[in-house]
Image (tube, rainbow, N blue to C red; front, side, top):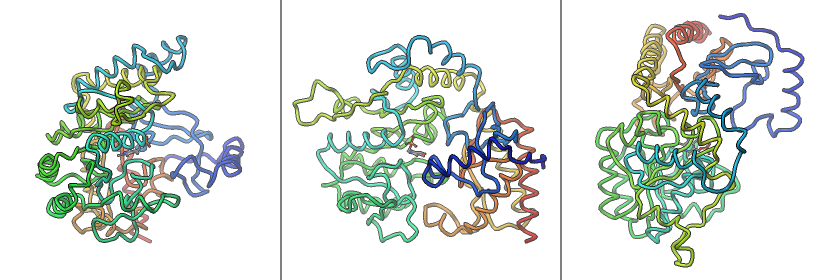
Length: 434
Ligand SMILES: Cc1ncc(COP(=O)(O)O)c(C=O)c1O
């Protein structure tokens, strides 16, 4: 294990500022216990560095966008080259148009695109487009599925006590109660129950939204195909949330990877190359609801955003996509991920730890349960205390990951994998001794 530097006075001062000015001392929901809390100084490739000089192999990757690793030379050069031309215009610009074309050519369902700034906005406006197009107000989402932090999305994403399907449990205070009756909840990977809910409520359902690869749970063979069929049968727009999977599972996203084409999709993270940019894409007839020519028609969506099509984010996104497009890039991403997954699996077995590795090669994690996990309720069977200790012990050993995700980048090397597996081995030694 690399020797940890003691916390510098400067980092200590900044951590105190965090406590003083940020609620909970955090920018969102990621925070670490006081003994291992840190402030990032820089990121480069697969590593980030804290203010005291500690290095971490980074599997958090900014929550997903940094698929090339941090400060990739091509992205830095593209942004630097553009900066002198201004930062944002609120009107047509070449980088946004080039990115629009690149995404529409890559993603099977994407005939048209509307840019926004965050993944939450993209799912929010995709749902609004679907409801406008169908003139029906209710939506269906899946238990455990995460689509950002707006009021329709934060329903049964992480309920500690789930209700009977299709009833929704709000994940946050402050969500109007009336929305609990607007969102139906279905079990991921259970086509039978999902189809029954859709059949019963199709007359009021304006859209179905799904993470095609839900968190780290893969779709069972036939699930997405069946969902496509039943939504098509009732002409209900099917929305894939590709904020995570877009350009990660494949160049054309989860829809290419799993071979099922939705009507609409939400993209974010990778397409902005680490800058704030997201998009709704999809069928031209549904996307027409965004067309301002229809302003007086009654089925026009008011969607505008100060940073829509921001050129700096667009050049960063374009530079990222160009790197991803180069021969062998996805092969490398997948093979590094596969090596780490296999290593984790071997160590779980060697140490007799009850657990499994769920996911696909570019995104996965250990789930500490022997029960089959095909949906959110399966995840609930895991030993959360073990997961918490696993993450904390790894962080002490210079391995940074999300609370339940390991994101791979093309910058991760065989040496990173080896160092990570050594840290995992030490972690299992500690966890199985105690
Ligand atoms: C699948 C999915 N959809 C939507 C979002 C929301 O994106 P953002 O955090 O950019 O609002 C996230 C964020 O992690 C996500 O994982």
